[in-house]
Length: 328
View 1 (cartoon, rainbow, N blue to C red):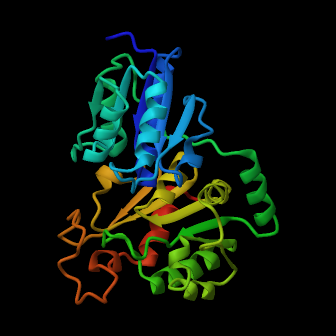
View 2: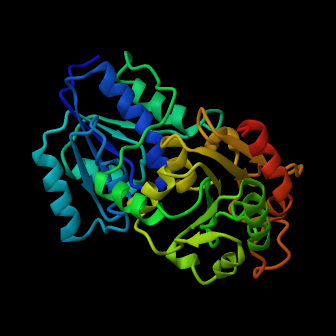
């Protein structure tokens, strides 16, 4: 192995992917403690990893940057001044490869997606190519700022436990087969509340707020959909007793925070993007699962949101799976 002193890791999105890369850079730092590791990601995701002591610096870049703008020259000049020995490019798009070229970084290791591996292992093996002494960590970890944790504790202090987070966001995801129907979320929430007698905590993105407003019908629920920043949502999730979500960034955040979680999987391959080393993957039993397609071939029309594979997952099946995995 060459003698590397300072490296840059690049992954600008999505949230879950960046969380999945944390195992790689923590493993490398553990094996090579004198190595300086910097990370380039999007402004949205940066707060999720900036508290990790394995990273010396975290830089941000607008993922929609133009190669022909003064902005990209400023970013390239910034990176050039760091004199990196190596880039581990975990998102090797043409634009990001050109950014590395403009920054004058001569050695670059490129990520190649391998569907036979979980994403965490796939990212790790990319880094292991140049850091062979690294051993893959068997759990994900995230570190949150104390101010966000204090905020979450204050917001949740008067609600009865257990706190059960239902992450119903991602309704309008580009990938169909991730979205669980609103009526089933309501049924699930009410049955969980009846069974556990706690509080249902609702999370999701602001763009989903109006569409998901019927979730307010869940008994003993508190609705944070569209109300929190990403890092504050992470803090709320960290205090949960349970988390249930489709394949999404918040699901993988919950896994990394050590929360008991269940992922609902339709089109997406759970072996590839399921809960890593903990949690439950509840997979639709339809024969076409997982298809890994962006668009479901069985949707009735363009106005229909829910793929049949996700509609097939019953609330009672989810409750049974959680009860078996996490007996009271």
